[in-house]
Image (cartoon, rainbow, N blue to C red; front, side, top):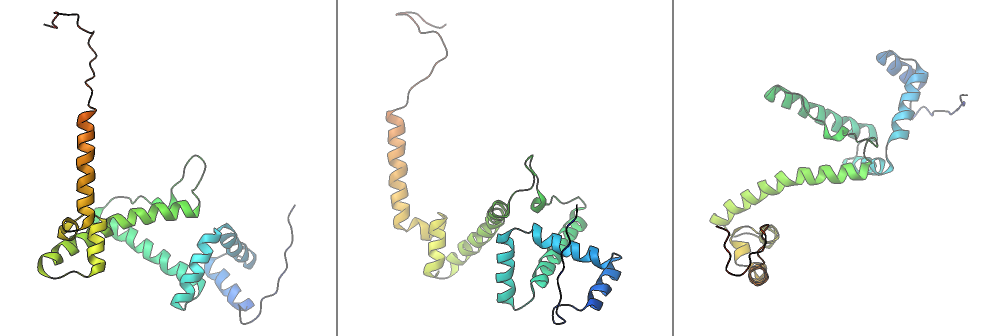
Amino acid sequence: MSEQITFRLKDEDFTKKELDDKADELDISRTDLLKKAIEIVVRLDPLFIKNIDKIAENADVDFADVIKGFSIGRIAKIDAKKEVWGAPVLLEELMKTDEGTPDSQFLYDYLKEKYKKPMIENKLQMLLEKEQEAELTDEEKDFLIKNKKGQAYYNSEKFKTDKEQREKFRQMKENYQVEISLEEPKGKGESND
């Protein structure tokens, strides 16, 4: 059984003509257009909606413009990759498991970490090159120290502490090293030869 939902749109939101024009453009009815719009928003995760709202507010654009801009950017990246490499592109954003699609927070965390790795490598490479020619800022030195790279790290207290810990671990490992053999224990005076 279907439920009927009725609501009014103010002219400052959308006019009936604008809705009809968009429906005609998509070759669907006005009702199907409204169903599609509602379906999109209802299926969006609250975290996603809050983030899009925040981005829209900061960029001073509409909610739909953020989604449109990000979608176009991603589609352009996919098409560019296909054009250059000539192969299909794996869309991790659309991953599925036996339980279905992951929730927004999991997907966000996974993709953020994935995207950070090459950025960190690029920044490290840039800072290591800069370190050879110029003085680094404290923030840049901290970044190198955090990632254990460059002279900033080797001259830091963290390196000395890390070195001491590595040495303690090495000594501990040597002291507690036990030989494991799968051979039968030898009796006195016996040899395995």
